[in-house]
Amino acid sequence: MKNIIILSVLIFLGQKAMAQKVYKTSYKSEADKIIFVTDYKSEADMIVYETQYKSEAKPYSGIWFWTQYKSEADWKVFFTKYKSEATLKIYITKYKSEAGMK
Image (cartoon, rainbow, N blue to C red; front, side, top):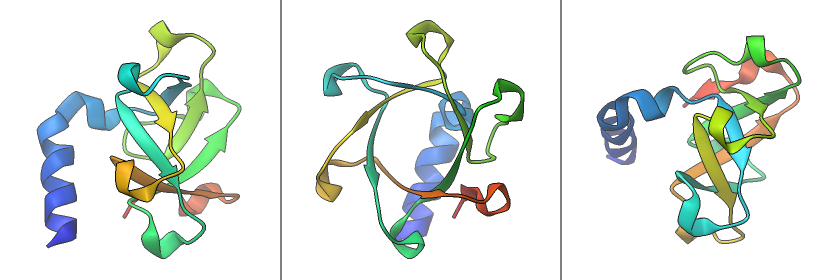
């Protein structure tokens, strides 16, 4: 049931779900997504690989490029300490091949 709800939200968001260029904001109120970083892959909605190259960041790939400018970003994200506040739970991986939606 949980996976069906997540899939429905991603389909509904359409273009927003394609985001891979990400800007970290200091304010929850301006964030598109509130992110909780989990220690376990099994708890994550998305497995994220952080790249240094903008060209590697592709829609639905889970490969994130951190931009310095808010205007360049597809998503503005705020990191929370509380899992219950999060709109998206991610696990950060060292391996590009693991990246993607679950």
